[in-house]
Image 1: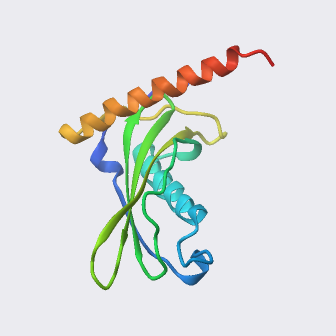
Image 2 (image 1 turned 90 degrees about the vertical axis):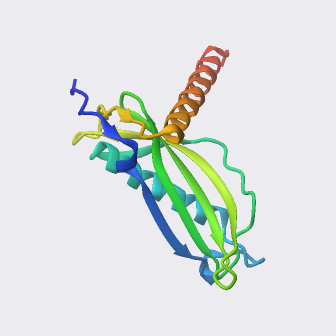
Length: 165
């Protein structure tokens, strides 16, 4: 089994992405397709996890995703992502999405997602990731909350495994 790489700062994984919502990104109401926003979330999470582990990653899960505000055609999507917690071979990446009206500058919180990414070695097998060194109070809070979400996911997985087929 591979050894765990040296610890890394949460700051090293930060990602900021910006996209404009074009007509092909929208539904009949002129709002961004949820799937398009989800694809951007997945991409931002993958970049953050790759920066942390310096390895290939795959998406294992996305915690609940609730769209709080529509994103209109012509608006700017701003995605902020960083690793919240690193486990043995997986990482939780938090992604916050804001919508910005380019004419007024007003911003709205579109959604937040927590994406679990798994690091893979050259043989596409899970591989250890560096421990996360939270840099500041907010990063420590995000790490604590990520650990709570992970415990809940594992409890749910255990309950499902115990159910009769």
